[in-house]
Image (cartoon, rainbow, N blue to C red; front, side, top):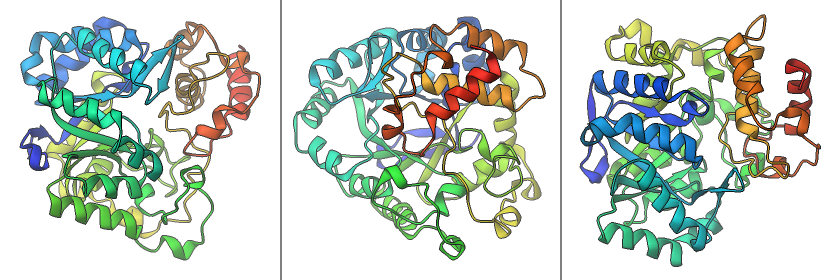
Length: 381
């Protein structure tokens, strides 16, 4: 495993990180197996944005035996309310949620205290001038976090964060499909239709972001490196062909300031697919030949399981329902394991009332109500 210094935090992080969101619904023994295999391979950074108590507890049990080996990205502002994930800036909810995170991870601190999911400039400005950042700075003074970070999908927000001396690192969505998009101010139309000529090169704002972070010593950890798995599937890839995990990882890790990719794994074999990056040949890493023939991108409407559609008025875990539906749809028949996991959900696609409230919060323009109907037809409930 190769390691990189995460900007001015000084932390030495593995190029491949453990993006733990895929452990949702996984048996504790499987989570432990996955974490142990990752640690044995030299992976030393893990991201935990998920507020689900079961997920936090499973991850905590898995990493506790080797806690001293792990650098934890722990998110501040991700809460669990009425059985659902909720992003909030309400300090009466934020504070107990962070306490819960530490308790369930069996630790008294996290190395990276992440201001969770800020995708609007006005929201960033409000956070950085109010009681939220004051709380984060108190955590820093108390040693309960070692460094302040921020997660965002929006390059405008990321640029503001990179220029704010209080922010030492950023978790940002990076992959070739995203980088080829032109910049827009409104995240709700971030994946709209654009002319082919607009995709001739990298989005200039994203290029500016990478250069700014590099110059300011602000390290980047990557989310959505595989675009929720879409880049690995030729039928869903905006490039018309499947990229390999190694190609996706190489793209991310050759962007300025990028230090680690928080890759998601469902089992040890998927972990190994990512680990193979470390020994891949230059030919196996080549993504340029794929990008050279990239058509107009078609990411609009593709769920990447970010969970920001929540909370559902009915209580449905939309991201997880979509995840199981997409896993099932990629096979000729619904895999038994996927079907069992889906059926164990308390609320399913059939419980959707089609109100569309969730769609207003989706940064990727997914027609969620329609997708729920398709999932109902797929699983029968």
